[in-house]
Length: 128
Image (tube, rainbow, N blue to C red; front, side, top):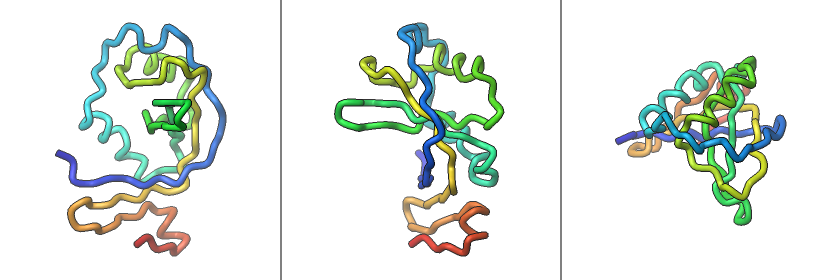
């Protein structure tokens, strides 16, 4: 069981089109621990990453953070994730989107203690 969560202020970069063949032939089970480990490098270097946000229920305005990608990740690698991952996406949606991560704030869910990325520390902002 995970004992921490992340808060990530985002800025929109661009839409990424969804294709019907995405997520049809799942070959990679996207378990909670694996997904969490993908986010760890963003904590110390959030400016080098963009976050893929996918629609879970587009009509209701519900979205989920799917996967962080390095800014220079080739499109073929993003497409490989979409073609092989079991990450749920609303089948009625026609696009997902990439966002820049302005900060990454870790929170211990038991103690409430926060851990700030360098971006937040450098701006001398405090999160309560």
